[in-house]
Image (cartoon, rainbow over all chains, first blue to last red; front, side, top):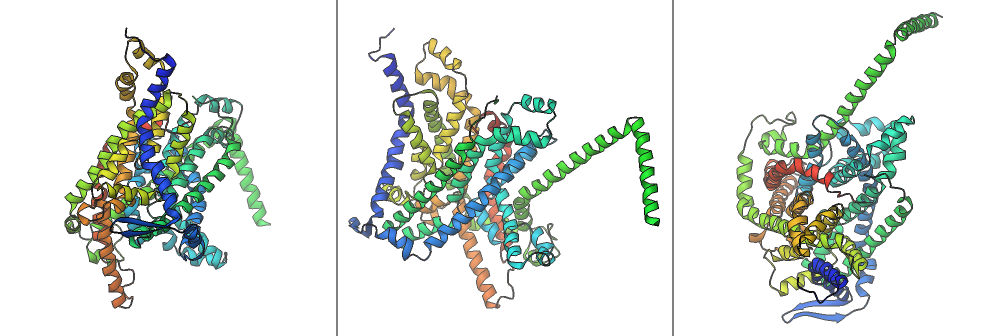
Length: 291
Length: 330
């Protein structure tokens, strides 16, 4: 047998690095360097000229501009934020509900599961934009039944309007939750059946075993799904911040300002995700009993 | 007075009935059985109505795309057009320049998907099985990569690719995929990590004892069993690349290189403008009359048709794979 010059341990490390080496190179080229450059650009004023880009240092000017002179940035940031904060909890609740429904043995299981993932394929990107513009992204039930007139007698108009708007966005929420349903479904499958059987022997109702078994067990997937939903809602195709940045960069050729906005957005997303981690860190604990 | 007595008679009747049933033990069974039936009926009602909501966009598009303008404007026509017409499809096919768009979309989607399977699987295996110095840092960087929105780094990446002369080629999509990056690359690495972590180590040990090297063990033993994870990554990657418009809009700037979803957006834009000028000219009397809606919907269908067909074939295995691959993690 050939004798290796390296010790077992060193060889093990080298093997490890060679497996992820590709990724490390990619990280440097496609992530670290661009990130560094975009941070650098965000402090510069970039002019396109024949010899390439001309950079002049402007300090925090772009950041200040984003918060003071740009009339679009802050409102767009706010609306993105509002839609994320309202939709993510809805997505979570709804997808958990669907996953539990689908987890039961029923006739046509595969069909239903296939259907529930369908909107991920159909209703994303350009198609969704199109459906939304045609008003087809809202189910007609909220319009057709004259719900507004009927409920107007009981609920004051302003509240009712926002409530109905919320209800209308429900279809979008449902179509957005395909991936999350799958993740919850996979999570539900890992909970061992014996836990439910034991609980049933002890006289627990379905309601109780949901809150005492399913919910704590599904908590890690809750975190995964929350993160996934937040990230995807921040980077969705119909996200307006995104198109605003693109417009600034490629229509106005304002690379510096675009970079600065990108960074503000990035820091902002990180703050939100940090908050989520904080919220979840307490409830992530007892998850034994998994298969 | 009368009401009360009637009520009393009723209750005594009911009591009588119930005691009789109870005596034979029937009531319990009847109640239980009917509750069960109700439960199941309610369950199917809920799931079927949800199914409708999920199928709604597809049904809507198919239905509208078959209509002629008169049907679209006709309020009595809900789902089934009075006259089926496939003319919209022909028109949409031509103005999308379907084959050119399809070729662009297919190269981006399938090329990236295959490369991402190869690279992300390799990287995921490394992360799942090796603990080297700096492992923690690398893992955090991986998560970090997942969270960085593409908008933040779009400017330097664009400049970088344009320096290399890659604008209006497929290289900005394909090359990062080779390195386990690209669209949602970090997520795919995470999926493979989860999968490989769930595999018993004995499998590799057996191969190692037989004298296989690290890479050979991976390629011969571990890569082939990762089929469930591969299927997931493949479908996600294809679908997300297919529907993505951010990166194509950035790197593919001349109409010749547009992929299907970009062409669709353009198709729609021209139609929408026509409708708007129409409604302005008639001072809004047409209002929301969706001029060209049927054609737009036909174009939509054509755009997603390839991945719909793909999904039709892999759907069954796909959902099973999600369950088996431990995508959900710990």
